[in-house]
Image 1 (cartoon, helix red, strand yellow):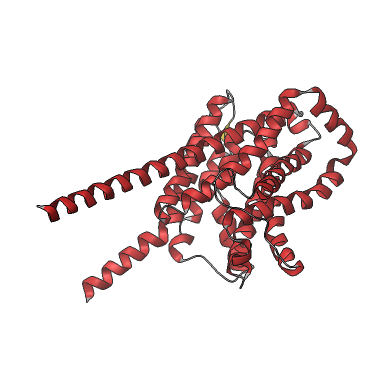
Image 2 (cartoon, helix red, strand yellow):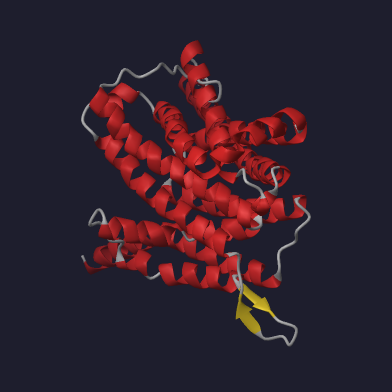
Length: 351
């Protein structure tokens, strides 16, 4: 009886532990989605307050957001605690050579952010998200050409699905009901630049985290992200000055006289940092397939949710295009898992 009681007590503790972990994971998912959702709203409102696609402040807004993120990173080093993860986070002691190595990652991270902001500024959030869904296409190209790591056949077969989805979203019917390709050129170009930069960022991230000794000095992915935001801000400052430096005093005036702009620009920087931290925490607690499903669901929620919040419902073509593109992204993410599982099953049957 005593042994049975101990087994029962152990099983109860195990169940409670599983429930606690599941509750933690659900909370992380909810906060990640919520952070991403609000980032897109804060970002779009700030850009609209700054004049939208006709305004002269898109580059400056993107740089300001990284300034806020960099300040958050510095604050976490000062207090030695990451306020989001509640884990120890100290300023890593890197050599000059190691700082240069991290700066390459920071550069592509900053360019990916800049491209995303320019894309969202030029078009609707929904269309921007659809264009950004094509990131795997760019990642496949970059990894093949620059790093000699082509995608598997299973993944490559999914790329046309993503391209077709984006193409459908670009279709617009004329007054006679005939379709023609019509889109915001700047949004597509900026989104493509963001995707290309994100592809290089992913490859550089893998390189940095595999560099001997560097991973240990950084201490955590959160610390790496914090350092990337500081370096990324420094990298974007000259870009913003070249592109919009003549309007810098106008930007300061806008910050001083328009509290709606300043609030949304600042909150977009905070939520940008927060949801990236939360996404990393969430994905490290899940399998590859679960992470793929989560990313797919996140994009759907952002596209639909922000469209409703901004009062700009999706067109039929955007709904169909986003469905096709996001399905393609999901299949691309799980293709190797499904193919590998089938292959392994076939081998087992033969043996």
